[in-house]
Image 1 (cartoon, rainbow, N blue to C red):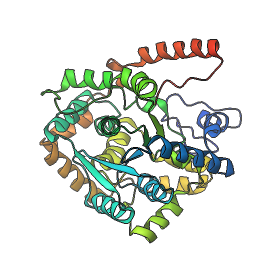
Image 2 (image 1 turned 45 degrees about the horizontal axis):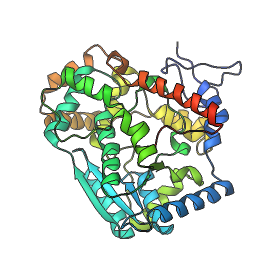
Image 3 (image 1 turned 180 degrees about the vertical axis):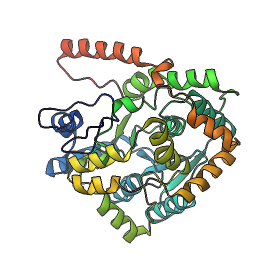
Length: 377
């Protein structure tokens, strides 16, 4: 029988969830005791953010651009883009087109870039390779089908940063709306070992243009040799998603997608059909729970929204038909993917062993030097 947290709306669809004597889950407890220490929606955050902005300006003073900003057209990255303009930074805006953009996403990106007078570089991913990787992941039957998109997005940002001599990457990722997420549901999108292992087993063509980020690059080369940093500025301000949407609508004519990550037609189907139907994972639960613990939503509001259907039946059939046509598979093949035995990403090689070794080295160095060492950018 399913059990739900008495404070947020996470439940036993997370196999690793636990509850204290008051029925409060480990996610809420971790948010209060660990995550909250890295969240500064107050004067302290403003002071920290001002210092970070000055560091970025100083590091990029002799460059055409002082930072890289990834722009998807979603709320978080769009809101960050207009704030970056207010701070006087000079970003190179990068959009990665993995083949699934909605027309509304394209329009929102254009509105952001025009309003802020940014230079935009759009990296169009080789579709035949992207399609082959998507199909490999579907054959693998794992939960995180969004890795092919997410990995190339972040990999492209790093590659553009190094080729342009830029040390800072700005991300719209934030604790206020993403502070809770069950680790059991997914693996790291940056795990190139896992990605290549899945493609090696199930892919049908080589990935010649799809660029990946290696373990060495991500944890050592970029942070220690290139001195690169990924900064999440929304963690240093009071970030209310509802207010952010209103400001975007008012200032640049930004239009809402109706659901989280609706800017990608693939992500829409993946999150709202594939995950709940095949694995029982409703990503609204961690999203709403994040909003609850950050004070943007009540538990009662979240429970009410969870009663709403994830998909309109007619809309679902339209999206599945488009999905099949895009990947050049039949409806029967799609149904076979949905009904096939699911796998966990750890059923394939990962870089987790290397990460544990690196964390042991990090711990030893910190004990010797007495200083905290970050082993990632």
